[in-house]
View 1 (cartoon, helix red, strand yellow):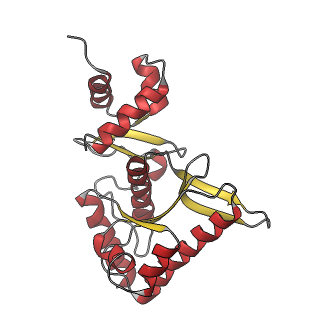
View 2 (spheres, one colour):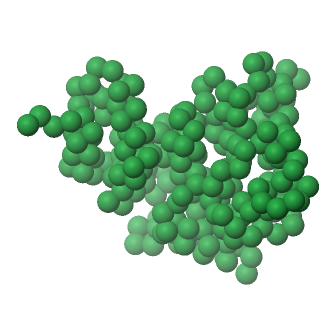
Length: 230
């Protein structure tokens, strides 16, 4: 029986031990339509069989869920035996988690998102954590774990202001503005209850999304937060 493309993708990722982007997989599998591989990989990620995240070079790459996430050399820690061991206050864990958050948002929203620097008509340049090629979807990611403190709430609302301001300068306007969190408790003040922040985000059409991160990533984030605030 001939293996399906899905089975061949899984087999290729398992045998190679590497993370491959959609173009590389299409080339290795001899699939002429790269979009076919893209659609299948998105479905496999939605089913929880592979990880899709932003790798070295800013492209979405694919790796097996059953194996360890392949970390590009530029991201690799100095001591592989302790991949989340960094100096106190270091934000490497947060940056790595934000890439996973944007990959989750890409899969959930059905668009390929990458970090973008957007120039406004006034000449100001603003960076967003994730946007598609046509700028129809803009996303800001927040990796914080647990209920936010007052200053942290202000940071999230600043991100929301940035999204709405950028959207006001673009024609056509983006169809979706999204704040993507990595923890339900962190997102709760911005989507539950009757707070003014919840009402403001709703009225400004800023959506709140919560990414599902691996337990080991969440544990690393909690440890990073403990180091930063000890």
